[in-house]
Length: 535
Image (cartoon, rainbow, N blue to C red; front, side):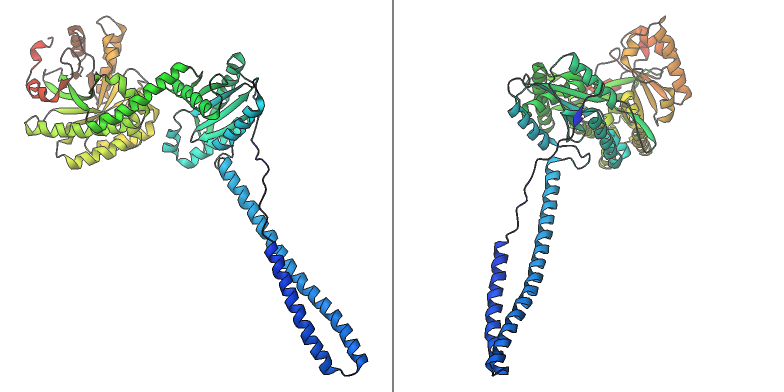
């Protein structure tokens, strides 16, 4: 069932009139001057040309009529010109006032009311509504909209926003309100609604309408939306509080998988506060050098020697101690800090690689994890290129690990970035294989060298399990595609025996070693695991 809606209309405005008083005074002054001069000059001319009294009387009479006619024409042209100028000024002032009003209260891309207009309309509604007023304030955010701008360009993005605005206008009608807050965020105010079945039905309807297949420039794609709701007056009695709480609820939806809606709950605010605290702590950690890299060895399952290491970021907080990556990485992913942490990790790994090579460990590879968002934004490519110039190391010993799910979300951009890295001599590993799409089509399209089988998959493998047959097939297919295979999460001899039986190339996990500090690794590099490998 469609939701009625309306576009907010501007209130009446008055344009300041031009100051015509000074113009009138100037006209009167000229009239007095011209009239006085005419009387003096014309009287002398009459007496000069006429001597008889009858002729003088006749001349004086016609002189007066001539003056009246002449001044009437003069003042007609003067006044008409002034009126035309005044009219042009008024029209221009009115047009400028309208344009300024539109800029101040309406969004230039979609034509929807903006944040300022919505704030004013809600203020008026709250003032006039009394104690019985109820409404639901909904913040709508387009999930992953930035990828449209990044891959299709801002022109396509703006076109999509206009189409979405038209959909909202069609579905949201009076007495409800709709506005664009900023970027890809919109607001809908559902008057007379509280938390309950009716609100859920309206939100589900909006969600379905916005999730339909969109077509732009002969391309089709489906986007999802995250919606947060604050109820007046339960969750706030003014615009700032309502938009803040609705936004908090919206971010709660995004943090739990996106594509849905949620009504504000005070616990969300507590989580949001923790989120802000974590943001500040991440900022301090970067500035104070609280991050460090630990390295987990990867073992060649044929020779038993260390093939390389995976660089893992660790956060040593001055008060809380070691903070697990699973706790701070998701926060960093949702903010721009993941980019800064990623660039720090790349530079640190390059510096460590240079140090190990100076100690004679030239054949030790370092695998560095990078964020999918940084990859598609080309930040990783730029950072790698900068560090190649800075550190004279064997770049074939540098690997970049990207997760399967993040690459597939933006495959076209990812392919471009990965290909650029390949051209620099950097090898590419596809991490967490087996948890996402696991499509052979993607394996063929992506310019990768290594497939890393996820630890969760390895943990379920036993000699008679279905996973064992799948594992064997994955390894065989990867080899046919010319790819090496790393098995993560190797913890038992049985798992190791199966991996060697199916000719997996490399193993990584607690069976061999936990992540190790850089200073302790040279001793570990000399260790031979061949005697521990099953025959």
